[in-house]
Length: 294
Length: 286
Ligand SMILES: Nc1ncnc2c1ncn2[C@@H]1O[C@H](COP(=O)(O)OP(=O)(O)OP(=O)(O)O)[C@@H](O)[C@H]1O
Ligand SMILES: [Mg+2]
Image (tube, rainbow over all chains, first blue to last red; front, side, top):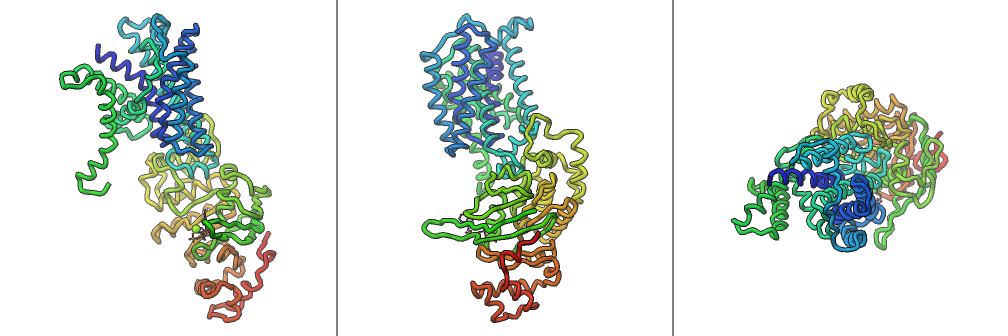
């Protein structure tokens, strides 16, 4: 049970991790707006479902809202030349207020409302008990595949090049700024989509649900890289998904058995941040142990 | 093909003003290859930056293939201009494969949702890379980060010429390479440029290279073109001539001094005459 739920959550949050991978790794853009776009997706999806729209439409709406939010961060960074970190933080803060406005109050309950995950399971007649596992796998796998295909198109290739060498992209006749805007839009679209699934999965949207999203996303990316040591794009995307599942598993285990070690649920964010900190510091520590300058 | 007309560019460094280009006029015919020499700070890179659109001139015009491109942004001119920098890291995306880099260059400016590496395009890219004679065609799937500086720079030159731009700008593009690799990359550059008849400006600090490559030689000093030799004059030029010329410029700001003190430069008369009588019009060639 614990394992099953962790995998389901890993797949659902995996969409968010893919978005974080796209901005941090592909574009080399440290986008912090995801803490705001995850609840944005949840808020938009919840609102649409409560207004009577189909849960699929709610997913699309959330994705669209994420696109706009990401493009906004990109525009701040490229058009107004605001440093990337700050651009993301500004968007995140604005989204906090905006999300409250969208929902009308701090949280919305979706209990008893249709969910895309369950509806698809009914359509496909998935065996009982595995509905969400199968459908979240389908959605996550589908998104992963689309992203993979995209990264091997001319446009996606140019986007990968932007993260490594914007000068080169410019000499190749493409304005890197536009690619950054588009890339951040896609990344946040994925994060918002993930937020929509989270809302439908957990039965509510909450304005505070986004706190720490970026750290969880980075932890997933890094755990995946640690586990699979990916070299190509394809293995990298799979690694992100695996990392996301691994991260949720670790969290569930920590929550379940942490109490005996003296942890409580409130220590979770501290632990997550320590995991990311460890992964970031690993190269420096390893070099120091070998007696080199980092 | 290329006309740089009375271009002036000054930089404000605090209260100080640096005149990087002072009324520079230069014209290159189609397929013409010019080498540009000049001491540090002469304005060579600034000239290329103005042509490529990285910086806008204070005054003057840049006309390429009949277009007045003075105000075009960099990425818009990129269809007309290929550029290679001194740093081999600057021209390629390290984390992408050789093939992907080439494919990006071959799809210059296009960014659709077609596959980046198309099966039927692979063949032509393979042939282009094989032509370099560096064995890179066997390493198409390798990441560019694994290539040596020379291999990377050869690849960059190929990428810059792949779509047959009207103009190729090379800024000391072999300066970071060892002599053998520099030699190779220059040879490759000459071949690609000749084969595709690309008008080329090559900045170099190596006098022998400046003389050996191309049919024009331009010397810059303190933001001005102080020497502009055509094929005929260039053929008779020796390295010592250039060294002496530099020395004379170093002694005094006034290029005309060379004629008066005749500072032991071979072919003195010729060059001295050229320096002294340089008029903007005499440098403008079709
Ligand atoms: N972006 C800039 N801001 C301020 N000054 C600049 C800038 N670019 C160039 N300069 C100045 O303009 C002058 C010409 O520089 P430029 O780089 O064109 O010289 P160069 O001929 O390429 O020299 P080198 O042989 O060292 O590469 C120098 O005095 C330089 O300091
Ligand atoms: Mg220079």
